[in-house]
Image (tube, rainbow, N blue to C red; front, side, top):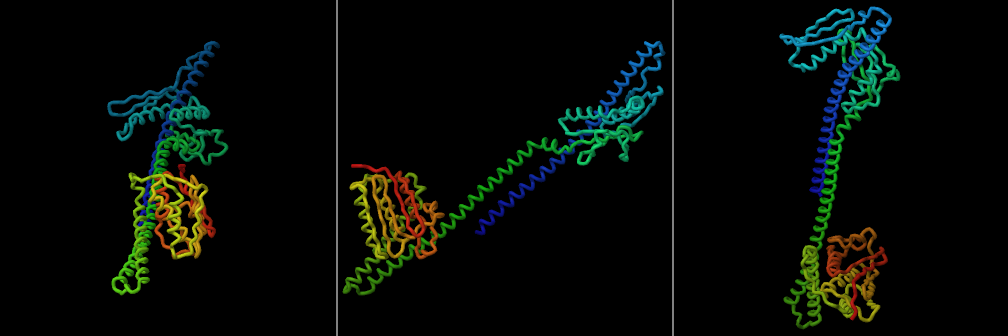
Length: 477
């Protein structure tokens, strides 16, 4: 019992550790993928900012061209519509990224920024270009946040991120709204918030609200989650299987121990009685008392016979391992065989025994091993006698395809009926504790009958007796 508890505790501990490790792994993976998704969103916002400036630049150019054409048509001076703004950048010999921007008045603004080696050059150059483009673009064309929403949605879609809701507004570093997005008027509680500074000089930031990206993160983890849960299911099933196996082994071990204890007692008892009877014959003068001599001899003979039956039952325990055991099967006339068995059983003196044999047909035959088949019938009758009151009535009904052994014994509880043919199984009778057994008699019966292509069934009710039926294919002579 203690060993079983120890093994069970180890199994539970292992499963618990594996479960906690998997949970820790999933949490770490969730955070890692979450960080990657956040970087993807920030990159998408930076790309969308540049796309938005290109779109605004195209709008400005279209407007300038349209105004210039209108001025030419009206005969006015069109030089006032010459292109303004624009940003160019290059890298000088000192490692500075130099940007030149033309403002609204046509003045050239030059800015130098030292490229840092601990950061990506491309990111720094894009950031400087973007800042200078805003410096030259924002005074000419104002922001259209509806277009920015659409552009950012497209950039996120390129990265397979599909938020149900997305809206962008422009704020300062303190969170004050500089450009309001009417789509956010309904409140922003529960949304993920991402902020990107695009104009440090003017303290302007994009602030994007979108539905939580948990679903996207989990979709990225789908394969891993399924794999982890399959592994967990496999571990749990393995644990259940091992637990059931260990439980069965523990039960079998307990039954085996009970069998050994009972069998030891059963072997010691007839040996002690036979020894005492033989000792009395040797050490006492019984020659002048033939009756006492006969009594001692009968006692010794009966106990030796009992020892033989016990040995046969012990050998029967290994029947399922003896797959190659050959049975000496022959055609047997059932009537005389059963009458001989019944006559021998009637001579038992421990109880008042009545055995009635009925045959539906005068001559019934069966193909079987005579010795083993006789042992089967003796086992059934012996059980009927042991598990009965002071008087036992046994009825044996013989037909061409079955033998029925019916008794008036104490019966078998319904919950025990499915298990009575299992090795070492004993029915617990509260009012029959004096009957000792070892749980292999009916197991032997079933194994032998199956080897002879026969079947056995039982019906029983507590207090009303039991009915065992052996089914076979009969023979007619």
